[in-house]
Image (cartoon, rainbow, N blue to C red):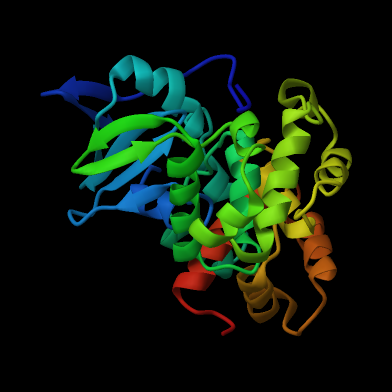
Length: 301
């Protein structure tokens, strides 16, 4: 499976209770995690919980004071699948303390205190972020769900809603670009999605080997695919390949960096260079806190 996995897992403060799991964790808030722009395959429910799909599993999570209530997943499944997905081997309290080098970053980490960077499946991440180019999050989410229904496998029903797995590269490579444009509403990205699926299906990437590549080399390899520019490549590096030194620069990050750090308008490349210089190996974490803080508070808009 094309996803990041840790070799060992630390024991969590988690227990089973009446068919649900109760997780006690100081850096885990489903709202912060799912609404900070890093993933698209989820629903926000009326009760404030979040239902997400990952590796053909449906999981529902809700904050309740200092607890996270987790539904529809067994304890074994949580450790086997969602431990790595939620990056639970990483100490985010330590990271937040380390990167809070000024008042701005302190405010950003406090605002998004429950963020965890997801380790997502490679192919779904790649296609999702091709769709994300010059697009809005509600439309991206809708396209991802429609593509899953059209080309994925039926998983089951939860809370009155049917769920489907994200398609494999083999399945999506057989799609017609005109169907993606008409039904999934992906616009100009239609042909790029089918072309990328064909290239992946033909074996252009070997996740287990490619994750060992140096980040600049892997970024270059990603950008050889249709529909993948610098920002999309960096999102894939950060969210699928666990390259936490990566700093994707989109419209919001550009505004935030210019308003809070650089104090003038500059090219995106200069923002990437600034992040590399000042944030280093933790740039990806900084990016997520700043993106969430900046977008939610309309900084620089």
